[in-house]
Image (cartoon, rainbow, N blue to C red):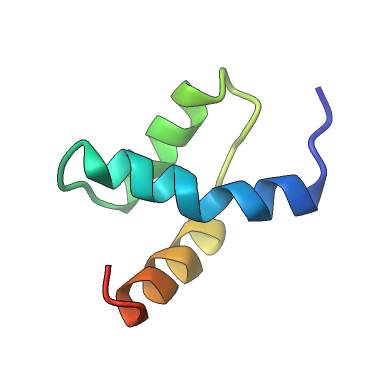
Length: 61
């Protein structure tokens, strides 16, 4: 399945929040969990994750 960049970007924040709602985590574990939850369709890098985490932190999450 080919996912558009817009779909991946739009799903990033809710996906990270859902993972963190299950408990504290760290970057590598979140990246790994995203891959597991997507059946391998999403292969994030730290360059994708950390801007999302920084934005969430600025927003008070």
